[in-house]
Image 1 (cartoon, helix red, strand yellow):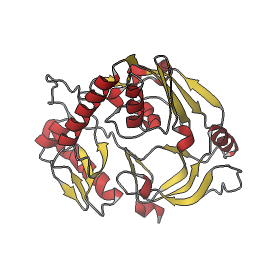
Image 2: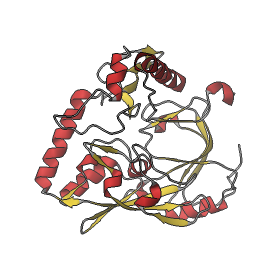
Image 3: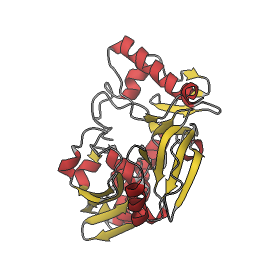
Length: 312
């Protein structure tokens, strides 16, 4: 573990931080270091001083993440309240990377701006940009104007949508860069109608997904290459949940891990699961689906770090 304790910071820099408490699945080992910058200047100065050979891993609220049991040999950077501000100017909505997607949707609706597709997406804005998050037929790529970031070398940068090469659940952000802010363009809408639409979306989600369990959202990308539209004519044949169900893996378990019986594209920590249980069950699902239908599922959940045996 590289000692970076001599770098002067105004935020908090902690060695050997247990990451399990920062992920929605509540699993994972320690990071070499966890850095919570006080503001963008603090972040830029730290990255400029950090030796080039030290890996950096930007972490949001841990909603779409499995940290393996052996932990992460990197400096994990997690943005806090200073990076969670939301502002409005005309049809533009500016949100800090640490702002929760749901909060951005709610605040925008109150201001008469339609970013309702963000309401049911778990996580924060930084992750939403990296994943081109979307549902109900709308994606970050449809609304993004620009992204502000700090490079691995500590310089400021602004990225336009065409530079991000958005695809389904993917965007190209250079290694080690930390997204700090995003600007969205949102159409006008009646605040009451927007709130009602979001209430309907939440009710539909809660009726079909294990929202009260320890999960990380959708486990695998839809083989169809797009999110649910939410419309009556939405097709399910190439949805991840459908091919998993067809392969007989609804409710499958390994240790404390389960493919939800309520929604089989959700990995659940039923209590006491390890990262190895969760990832191992996911790989078993992939094998069974491939054997049953010839479809190779791609992970939507990010898996990082080392297995426990490698860290010992």
